[in-house]
Image (cartoon, rainbow, N blue to C red; front, side, top):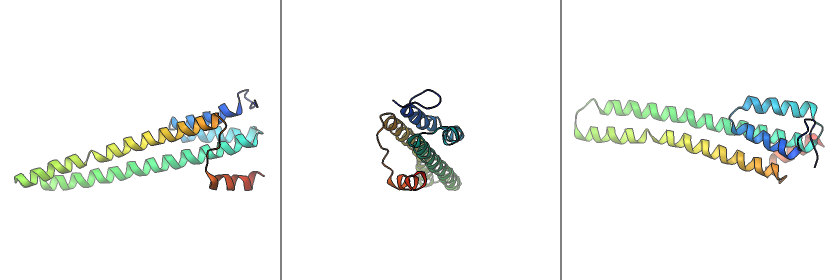
Length: 148
């Protein structure tokens, strides 16, 4: 089994990158990828490091976008709900209760996004630990062009 300069196996180091992304720190992944690109010699480890960085950054951007969208949704529903409570009609109260119910969906969407992000990074971490391909052909083409 091939080892890195730190003395751990290449597959474990590759999996560590995805698990580091699971911790939610893109900066930590960037530092680890920088170390690998500058000091390690294994091409497979370098390619996997770049894949881990790309996937972690994309998932973080999508997660941030979902959070931002949920803020807009909650604020929009809150404004409509406040307008609905101005009148004391029973119909307006029902609309208000329905809008309060809809305000809980963005939180659910954020939770689902975090769970999906965790599942993706754990699955990819274990795939790289077992030295199986990740299966992102467009990233592989770019990396093969620049590393060969």
